[in-house]
Length: 357
Image (tube, rainbow, N blue to C red; front, side, top):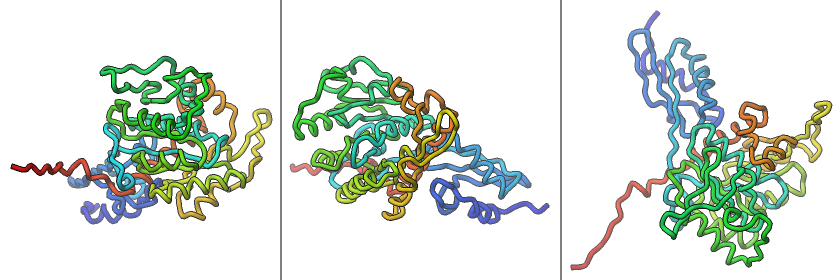
């Protein structure tokens, strides 16, 4: 058997498509190193997004084209550009805003499971509960108590299931209503975001408040967001508001990484019958209409609700279950879409200081 050349191997790797980016491994610049020693071929791949559970599958995809290759797969998450005029946040490479045009579509549940799934896939992750009026992440993450301050000026994030978290819910009683006007809410969120000592995060997931009003627009303009995810349910009334959320991000030049359809189907716990009780295909249609990615769908499942209410979301309560696998697939695709965006090089340029003699 004739030994393969470097060019032969590259030609075969062009046939291997990464399902998350939909690019071949050469076009996606995933090849870190190729070595050939006689009949022994070694290939090192680096993905731009966390994909711990997918790495064995990627090895199989490569070995389908090059059967005897020794393949290693790793991930490297880098910072990406944010909207113009907003400085990146210290200690955070990328901020992903999760939004919906209205409440009641399961955005907070999706946010916490997205954060936990990114962590399970190998990233260092935090979550910011930006819903000042109705914070839910403390309960969903099973966190009690108040954050500590080492210097009397900043807050240390709370920790649960290996993710860092911050919420106004840590600072006020769970049953106390936040009777605040818009400017106070905006200021509180900015403080929670910028006065928290985030520790070297690959991703900070921001659970945005529902709606597309003045508060949401202000937050979108002041928070350095690398990309956003729109959450909707299949029915037309939810899609109307989800489209408004898309337009909001478009106005402030924040890229929409894709759409997630929540409560996509209902599976009867008694007989197993699956039914599209809220309609069918709405999220996919919206993604197609706006030329963005359909990141996946999540069913209406009692275990999802019970896990969130009990402080053990699906990704940690049943990590290998069907629902958790869906969340992990959505997380990989979200991060992969972000990995295809422009990188942020601001940290590589020195600050220029002009001094007068």
